[in-house]
Image (cartoon, rainbow, N blue to C red; front, side):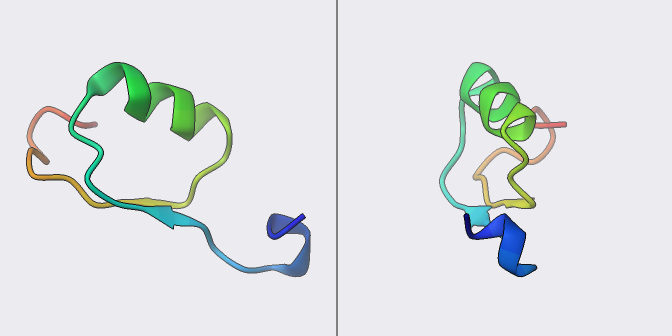
Amino acid sequence: KIKKTGKKINVWTIDDTTKFKQLKELGIDGFITDYPNIIR
């Protein structure tokens, strides 16, 4: 519903690559992580 309003969705403290991939597939716009070199 939020995406339909044109707003961006960001999540933070995503340090697990599996969770990152799941959230990326859901259309999350931005990620905050302690390990940016492994989350791509």
